[in-house]
Every structure is written in structure tokens, then in C-alpha cells.
Image 1 (cartoon, rainbow, N blue to C red):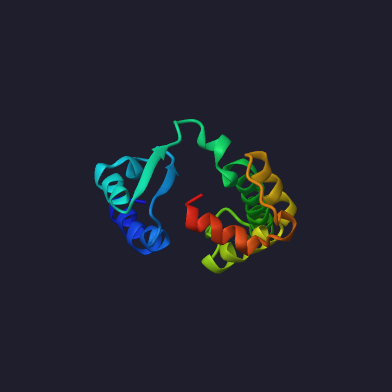
Image 2 (cartoon, one colour; image 1 turned 90 degrees about the horizontal axis):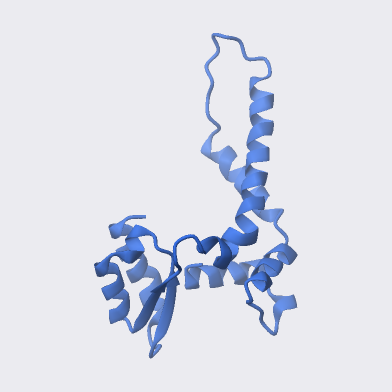
Length: 152
């Protein structure tokens, strides 16, 4: 993410999301691009108040950082390790080590995501105090859509 990508995000994601809303609030981490004056002014000009999560607290307040990323990354790593063991078990000293293909990495990522249960996702959200009345009926796709819209 850089200043250019931040400006694209504002135009393509945030601006349409807040269109027609009188006021809004965006809570961001202290990533360098989020803190740039041009980024904050452009968000403010859309009627959005911006505030920042103090450094070191994102891991306590962002659902993905709390309960989703760790098991997701662990599953992807397990797939990679299985791939590497199988691929290189008969490796000789002169053999070239190659990297997995993008297709393999994407398949590991999709498999890992599909292994994260709705229950795990909902438990993560509850942990930070987010609950809805229709909690038991919320599908993973709805949560992802909400996360994208809210930049969480």
C-alpha cells in the first residue's frame, strides 16, 4: 500500500460507500499511508471523521488479527511444508530448488480459508464486542463484505 493505492481505495471503495451518508467515522491503524495529510483530508472532505488505533493495539482491536489470520497462515504454512517435503525428499546436491507456483499458493489459500469455520469468525467478532441480532444466520460472505466496506 502506498499513497497512490490509498487514493484509489478512497475513490473506488470508500467514496461510493459513504455516498449519501451525512457523516461517517473511519478507524485506522497508524500505517504510514493512513497518516498522510492528503489521505486524511480527502477522507474528511467526504464527511468522514478519521481516528487512529494507537500503535501496538491493532492486534487487540482488529478481528482478522485476533482470531483469523493466525489459523489461516498456519494452514497455508502446513500446506507449503507438505509440498516442500514431498517435492524435495529426493533432492540431490546439484538439484535446483524451485518455488511453488501461484496456482499452488492460491489453492492452499482457498483451502485454508474454507477450513476457517463460521463459528471461529463469529467468536472472533464477539471477542472484540461486535455482535448482531442475526448473528447465527450471518454467512461468511456477509462478514467478508462488511469487512471490505469497513476496511477491517
